[in-house]
Image 1 (cartoon, rainbow, N blue to C red):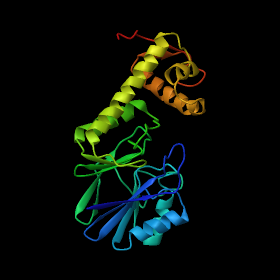
Image 2: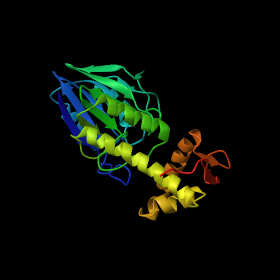
Image 3: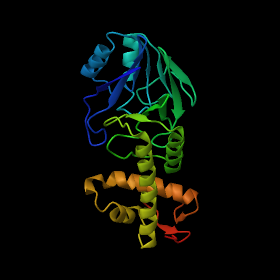
Image 4: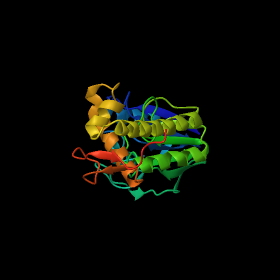
Length: 263
C-alpha cells in the first residue's frame, strides 16, 4: 500500500496548512480520500497523483466544506463512485457507507468506522493498524466538537482498536497513534474538570466559563471556545452533573452544579 498526501491550498485558522487529501493505492488501483473544496489547481494535483494508477472511488470522512465538495466533481471526471456516510452541503454520494462497511482498493481493505462527535456523519477509515482520522483527530491541534459524549465514545473506540499510525485530515501524520489518542482523551477530561471547577468557583454563564477556562486563549477565538463550552455543558447536563436554568446549553442559560466536585 502507498499513501500520498496532496495538500489542498486552503490554509486557515481552522484548517491549519490546509486539507490533507490522500491518494491510497495498492496493486495498480487507487482511491481518493477527502478531495477538499473545489479548487481547480488542487483537482489537477490530485489527477497528477493518479497518473500511474487506476482510480476506483472517491470517499469522504464527513461533509464539511473543506473536505467534501470536490468529491462529486472529481468522481464525475474520473468516472468512479463517490462514497460517504450521508448527503451533505455540496455532497451527494453515489452510495452511502455505514459502520463496518468495506471499500476495497487493490489488495487492501478500508474499513469504515462511524465516529460521531465532531459531526454526526463522521467516518474514520482503517487499513490494518493505520487509521485515516479526518477531523476526528487532527495533527497539531484539538477539534471542534458538536457532541461531547459521542466524541469521547468515538475516541475510546479508536483507542480500543490499538492503531499504530494516524493520517489526519489536517496537519502532519502521527506515527505514535496510541499516545496521540490518549492525549486527546486526557485533554477532553481536563477541559471538563476545568469547566466544573469554574462553575464551582461561581461562573454561572457560558461567557463566565469561557473567561475562566480559556483565559489564555486569544479573545478572537472565544466564539469557538463558547461553542465548545455549550457542547460540554450539554454532556454534563445529560449526566445530571450540572443543571441549566433554561434547560438547554445556550447563551441565555445560567448553570449550577448538581453535585460538588470531589477533587
